[in-house]
Amino acid sequence: MDSVYTNLEGRACKKTILEEITGAAILDCPGVGGFTLHVFSDDDRSTVNIVSAEKKVFELRYSDVVTEGFSWLGKKAEWRVTRHDGKIVPAALIVRVNGTDQTDLRHPKRVPLLAVAQIRQTEACVVTTLSAGSAAANARARAIADGPALPCLKTVVPPARSASTTKTAMRSA
Image 1 (cartoon, rainbow, N blue to C red):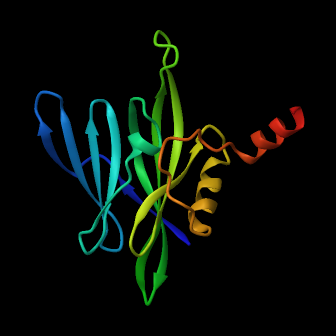
Image 2: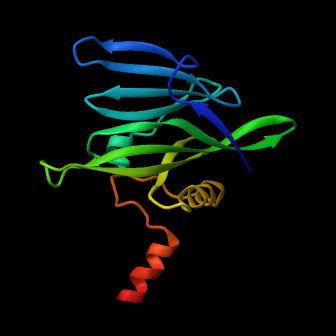
């Protein structure tokens, strides 16, 4: 598996305003292997749809499965790809989602997450979210992306911890 990156902002993406008053917009960003990304921003929340070469749209629904709070995306998406007969074939997508923990409304906290989506023949979906707070988070996200098929997330679940955090928690139990 290799990594190829797509910018989620700037000149590479074509912006369409969906709603002038709220600022709702969509960015159409080039991807890999004939795929593209649609980046939606509305009501201070962001999500991504993966669009296949055949124009099939896979909604990743970040507000349903990654974070329910306000969110914004990192500047790049990481595609995990394989090569078949010289062609790039996307297998997964990793996107940084900066969520907001609003349990204390006077002091909301930024919560950096990595959303890992696996791309299959008939579907693409987020399979896990990881805390992006550790140096090992990107490597862990790649290992999950490259691993066996996992079930699609249906609702927001707490982000998976890093291996070192899990070991520490197990020792203190």
